[in-house]
View 1: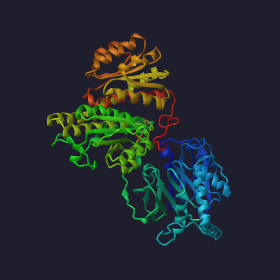
View 2 (view 1 turned 90 degrees about the vertical axis):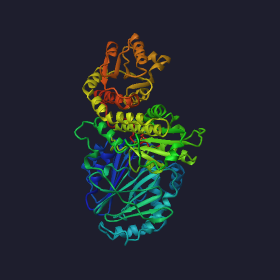
View 3 (view 1 turned 120 degrees about the vertical axis):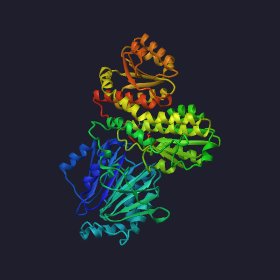
View 4 (view 1 turned 30 degrees about the vertical axis):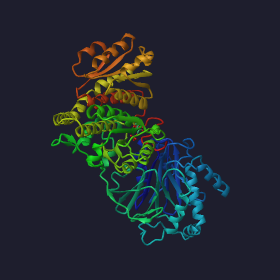
Length: 638
Ligand code: F6R
């Protein structure tokens, strides 16, 4: 969803702001804007509804420059995607420009009060109340005179001012006084023309990271804009405010005052967020899967004990051995991975698993006994519902673990422990490599819990060998790309698709249908294959393709019978089956062959042609694959 960038240093802020906003495009947005304080201390704001290209066009027509500024991509919540509603928003008297991620729940009463004070609102956003509140607070603290004075004295932009020598305490107090009135969530960046050397960033429930480099500081809502700019980062926690000049960084906590901040090394090469020669991030990420899977298993296979090992679970072997039930919670694709995990863990470890939509779990009050361990599965680590469900389970005293891709994200920090995917940045809005890495990490957990209970050493070793072969099997599955593209061209005009699979491949069917829906806007339904007789079969006709997942395994014959049922009603069938399957060739209209793997790993291989099918159909229909309409990469609102 919305993205924030900010810069203070000695270079032109706009260069980083626009580059950074482009790198945040994947989060999903519908307008963009920047605010820069120019060399004369004037605040210059340019905004545009639509894509960043529109903003750039306006900036070409009306160039601005300065060494401090903020930028934003907005995903509309309060008010439509218009120029006026785009961020930054300006406090009443131009004392502050603010960009905001999150939602202010009490913005209506605040707005009424500010209007009564004489503030005139220009937008329909909740964010504008923040700008006016800060403005009002600066006035109440008598800081406006100082602002006027500095402007009147024509002070040049001061870079490199040392925070240790300057007294920013009154400014901090005024901003904090405004913030305590807000109910809801915010990640905020602001610049104030009266303090043209200071960039301010504040966080409550919406992530913000400070980037540190020689003679410059950055802020962003995730680390991707920093690649090639900052080599060190500082994660802000809730109620923290960062004050940055070119050369200094100070972090202040609402209750504790100034606090020591921890600087961490950022290992993000500049090309990590580039397309690397692929036409779309999604295709690049699909093809990265052999490598992302290798990264997910690296160092986690323990041949001496025939099990998996994890560094960050933060639970003792005794605590883990006493786990009686797992609850997995997630949204979207990550929820599908949770379903795969349910099959894997119940089969290999014989532990009961329940998979709950996070948006349901957060308000449900299911009876959960002691011995229940919660896994929050999330690529971004910022999904609002998953975070809320995790907090609810923590509140009830259950241990919580995160399976997460983004290092340092809110869920990764709030869970008691966790497992990182190490899949690298996932930029395409449609999740691909994160899904397969999640399924693999869950397979490793199945092995781990299995070995804690009944799985023999030999069985553990066999599983390790199967897992080690996986990246190469996925590489082979990727070789279907050309064939899948041809199939995509034949069926891209269809208005409905069915995706059908059983057992381990039932979640794969759900995930294949979701991929098609979200990037090609074709209606698609995933079902357990046999269930289609109970309703969806009514949809079958010559224009409704059914995609069957039918690798060899215990339910192969059953799925083959389901294929017959579809063919008997004139429906076209696209089958994803094992290499050398002759039977299916006699029935299906199209067959995509994938290598055979153990059943608990099948979803990781069989999803590959489905990701490619969705991708090629979306391209054939002229859709914006990496930025599908209405979607956001990281869903930070409820
Ligand atoms: C679909 C997709 C979404 C996400 C969902 C959860 O391709 O990406 O369905 O899976 O929004 O996001 P995370 O995993 O970041 O919690």
